[in-house]
Image (cartoon, rainbow, N blue to C red; front, top):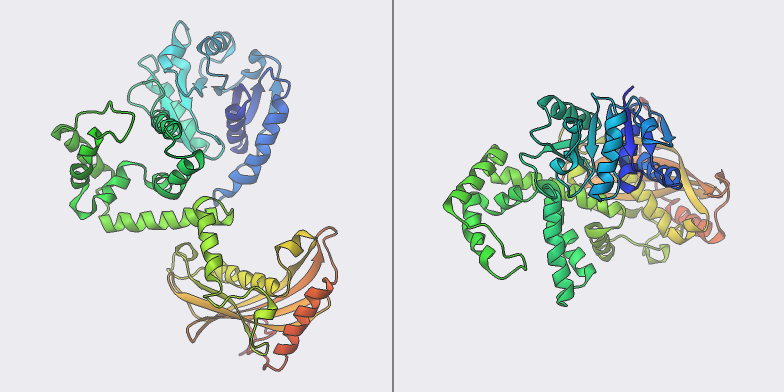
Length: 490
């Protein structure tokens, strides 16, 4: 079992504790703040909720978490020590003075500093070779980047050990070629931050408008391709040199308050073009565009689930389009109660396909679940009703996969109410692409009191609407396959 010592248990230190702990390390914490244990416990609650679901393989068994009254106790037996005290050089050096006395000589000592260079942290200490900058990004338990910065004092073995440990807890060690104030990422952040302050001060934009410029535009692109690869794609088939020739001269225009820019020489253009070729030249522009598009769709769909940022915009657009797509929100809008109800009308998204190139089996259930939700909405089991304490829970499901469907195909689901009485709701879904039957889903649901988690009759208006639909559908013939068990003859 590996042991990590966390010196300073604030937002960053707590994130480090969670990252190590959930990756199977024992964690020992020192922080004189009497509220440190509570604060780290709350950070851990968030980490336990989110980090395990990031991957597709279970995390190792969680390590043990202990709090200690002194630095000496906390670092006893530690393989990695992470200093995350406030950004004051005198305070950090005081910590390193204590670490020099008590830390094992083979341990790596990482600093979370966002601005200081490792040479400033190492100065005057006999154990300087152990000290490196390991600068994370909040939330540390989710974001993988670590800016790893050393000096000539650090041996290759220390850097290699730091990289190995950082990688082992699911993070990416970006080893800087040279030390520099604020490393790499924070220099970008500070440049954008300074420009944003001017835009607010000069009355050009509000803080919300500036945030929207980032989160609805280039921020999403940067999240999946960074800066240079994004501009490589922007150059199209003519290449990155074409992009630089077009937009390089803009660097001398008064578009920014930050006018200290490097001279745009042929040598600089060639250097960037060569590095860009090495980075991305194995992909064609069309391939890079498809990769970009897949990533953008995935990220924005994830944000849709939280009704946030660009995802919230898409949700609002979907809401506007529901009526045009024939999707209704109340039973009174249905013109013919004798026919199955359209409960889904959508295109199969990119992230619904599997390694065989067609819609994965779990997404059939997802589509039918969305159809069930639409049927619930039609009968009055809406968000307000669910918030009041009533809902339907699925008790049994049977899906038949009849034909395959691929990304980009338009699918529709029509739903027939087989039974709607008392606590029970028995639904039959049929999924089509045009006239081609793709799948059927049969679902038995029970109405539940969300407070007791026991089945209970629905509210009178919900039951009346469900009975109305069931009565209207009662004259329809029984669907082929209704009630069939797996393996039963057709």
